[in-house]
Image (tube, rainbow, N blue to C red; front, side, top):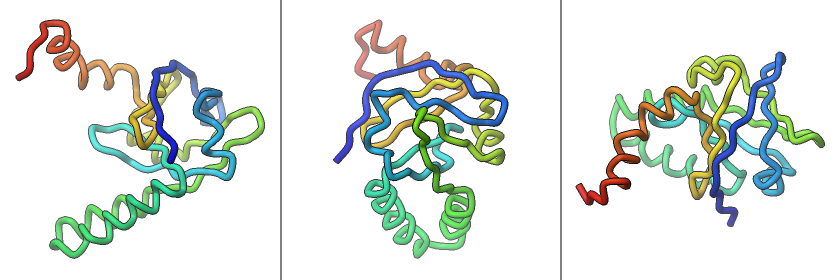
Length: 139
């Protein structure tokens, strides 16, 4: 099972493609799946981890109308992606718009997936936790 760690700064090209860091490429030689994710980022999943997420979503869909609609939205905005020989992958326009990806993109490992962030959005989300770490706070 692939595990992802580390942080890299990359840039979208004029065609909406992103170069995946070399460290992350091997598990995606046969492709991957790109989805909307919590907090306004995108998640890139290996095929095996995407299967786990689909199972979770299928269970969630049985919980009620709101969850069914969330699952519908997640599935309709999921995209199978290929990584070419140069390590580039196309990010569909609707996913770039969801994550506000324009130009600079923060690519980081999130253990079972890779997350793609607008750097400004990332700073807003993690700055309080970063300060907690610096302060040594458990709360």
